[in-house]
Length: 375
Image (cartoon, rainbow, N blue to C red; front, side, top):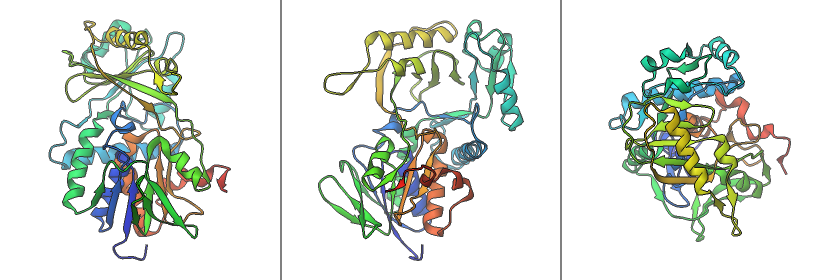
């Protein structure tokens, strides 16, 4: 971008929006950050936030995720006050009954991913707090380089930096939209009609991103389901690793509780007559039981609160990041892996906007890959 100090409007109060804003101001841009409600009130506030590149995925996506994890290590090392927000204690997973994760383990090893095969009697020494009797008889995969992050804590630190840099922050602005004139993104507008002029716009509105792009004639795949995470009250347990078991995924929380979700509980969500999602008490109770079953000593887990809403997942599963062909000045960030990619995506979007080039890591993740393209 030729403007030495461009003004960029960033729409979104989650990790992608705030990270993009911070990386832009670090490089000298003038930034206005607009949010619908409070920061982390969307997907970033109710995410399992597991930092990983486990399992099978394309090589470009794996490389992007590995770079994303690397950024978290650097940030945690260099950022005062980050110790409670990022925890590199590894991840443990095992296969459902009747399946095997041996091929997955070999796949990960062939990629150079830090994976170790543990037999059940080896789990306690590597991942304390797990009930080894619940581990698959064949064993489990331990990924030592994985972590979890508390995104609300991270956002508070990033926002402090953003405010110190003099960025303008418009919180509780309702559904903010991109303003396009003569085919180019020229700013943003709040729900009340307040306009922000800008040289470029970053749209990072979580699950609302595909709908907003569609209003501009840009069509991307959207597989976002309604999901929920159950957060428990503090639990006395030595558990530290992230667990991804057949019936429940678990991580610790900054207050000593647990965050838990699962595929089956997501499928159990119903909708009321008002169209709002409903979670039956028995579904939550079962999720808590499943969590207790895989933790050593089977502690009684008490629900603190639920986080429910749409989980951002692009069609095909892989991220949509970067400039929008056909709408000059518009950039977007839409991905399921928001926690893993959060810091890196903000950095790469800032690079693309300010340097006028597409970073190699983003080449595979353009919105233009969808057949719909620009109407």
